[in-house]
Length: 215
Image (cartoon, rainbow, N blue to C red; front, side, top):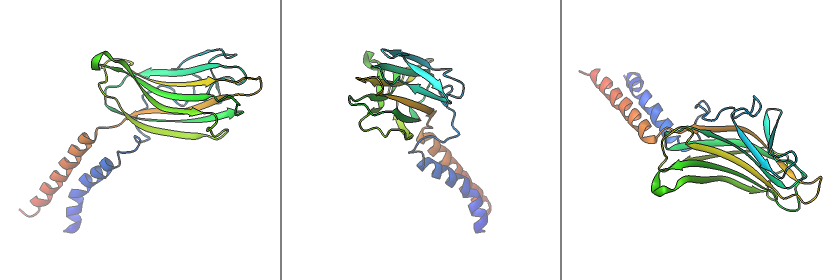
């Protein structure tokens, strides 16, 4: 008798467990909203730019994006716009400070920008990371993950952009930094209310089925 009861209740319990686990990043099998986030096919899908560096901007090597060019002061940027219609996003990526720690500090920044409908704001910027080279762990890959909520997101195509930039202040040739960027994932997080309703529905269905056994 107890085994029959558990067979009715188990689906709802599983969903509720998943619900309470949604406080972390989205599941690994969720759809990645950015194209070529693992940089397996060169820099396809990404927009790159730069100023002051030689060569400027971002280069591709060994299935990673290299942001910046050691030895010359300048700025390097890489970004991608994508379409989104929800509220919460899970964002993760890996990065590594490379070459030499400079005397004058360089800065690596990651941001999420989205079109906002509230009060003529236009674009809202969420800073994900702003790390200086003095505190960076050189030649060691770091994994970053965060969850963000987009308030008053405007509908439309390419309404969200993920952006990375390196500001280099190298004062002498042979010193300086670059960032090796990889595994960029931006994933939609299901709303907890949706999962809660599903879990409650399954539990109610389980109790109903369980009750029928005694009618």
